[in-house]
Length: 301
Image (cartoon, rainbow, N blue to C red; front, side):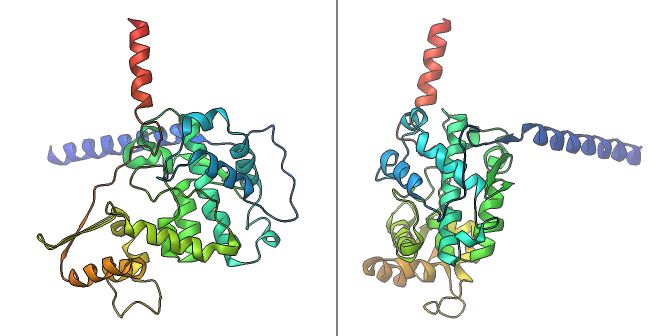
């Protein structure tokens, strides 16, 4: 009887597993460029369209005016159509340098995230999109064309940007449309000044108390969860400025201003606690979903 019960349980688990896979496949959606936009192969690749979007619709806190952008998305749609059709893999002649390729992939990621949010807007979190488990609906189950191939945001970040470039500063530069993400920059990444942009993004990130905070009384350093999730990227980075067997605090110190660097030196043997990640949307008008729902209820009533 016990064996039979286990067999039945195993069958049920298998059925549930198949159901979950089927549901996940059914839940997959595609974020497609506007089919009316015709893309010709340019003589050189420009990120000017994205730059205009970021300047116009992103504030100094990295928050996006999604409501206004949804009504004025012409530049974003043209840029997304461009990166959907053309990239370093299918047009390598347009991206001969490492800086050009990395700038492209980071800009493509940020543009794809904004576009994916608009496809489901208004929402309060990326977790509201599709299947909410582990944010899979937003990052895994949305099929997105980038550079002539179909991918998803998870693959774009991990199989392309992280695996190809081994550059930990990208974690301070690409934005997942959430409150605990690095601030979305107000300018597109530019190959000609990419090093300076990445350094600036890193300095800004570690300077914010929400990402790095030292409590000397409790002998604890509070860090963004990003340092937990991608610890190997930071401590295994082959930088001459890092000591042998570096710690997360050693890496943070690389980008910290002198006062914080001194505090981190004092905190070298403190415990580290990682902050809870806030997945609420990086919206300039938070609470819009809730207000819309209230108005809908009032109309029904």
